[in-house]
Amino acid sequence: EDIETVWFGVEVALTSSLEGLVDMRIREGQALAEDIRQRNQKIIKTIEIIEERSPLVVSEHAERMKKRIQELNQDLAIDESRLLQEIAIFAERTSIAEELVRMYSHCSQMDELLLSTEPVGRKCDFLLQEMFREVNTIASKANDLLINHTVVELKAELEKIREQIQNVE
Image (cartoon, rainbow, N blue to C red; front, side, top):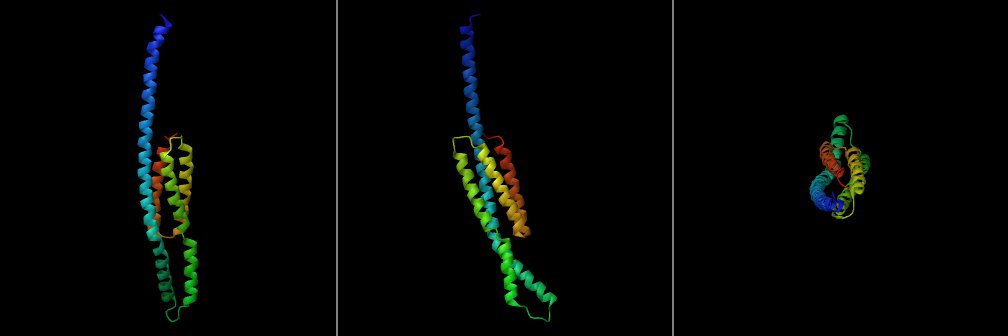
């Protein structure tokens, strides 16, 4: 058979197949990016819940401390200055403000990366690792059952994003 004649048919089929592959990958990439964006928005809303809860942790802890001291020392007066000092130490130790700011920043960066036309898979993966670190720090510092339950939800969403990121170049 004439190679040029055969090649023409092969070239047309190959070109069509490659164009179809590129189109499919573009559509798949757009679908992945949209899914990640939606999950990123869920993460932001969850962070907002944690941010609202965070100040209450200190005040609830202060109330529990006062109640315990009163129960233990029914006849003794509470040293208010010492109590305030302990509450301040607790507030400082459990403050998650920095972690929340970084999480908002990471979410914003993720949205920006998803708009890029360049390959961003590794960058997104690295950013996701940073988000996991912040969430783990929040869990360890928060000292609050409700925040820790919310952190579990955050981790679940981050894990779903991680699974999707594995399919991104």
